[in-house]
View 1 (cartoon, rainbow, N blue to C red):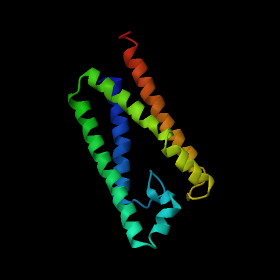
View 2 (view 1 turned 135 degrees about the vertical axis):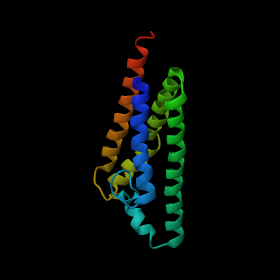
View 3 (view 1 turned 180 degrees about the horizontal axis):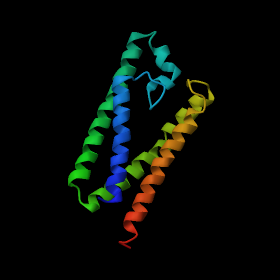
View 4 (view 1 turned 60 degrees about the horizontal axis):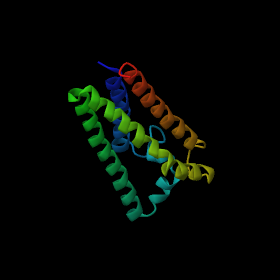
Length: 146
């Protein structure tokens, strides 16, 4: 077992916990639950808006299932190069959080639209930790190849 498999496994387990949270307790204020947004509770006053938000939350959970399934296939059957490519893609795609999502959640945090003050910083730290984990795995795994 190489470090790439371990990193892919860790990431998949965390994503699996997010799936369980989004399907089981979407209103939770932990584990990336949607309850951290004050708009979640406010949306309950409008059935159409709340239904749309619930649909989008479940859609995200559904795409995460696909994502975790594909990572599982890569872990079980992928070559070292495929695993290296998967971790590289995870690094690239996860870093896009800072392009659109982080500015939005940072603004919502500043405008007191979140139930947990400073949540945007916590989330940014968590995403940065993933990026560091991906970079470290890529460097360690490729150092012998160079």
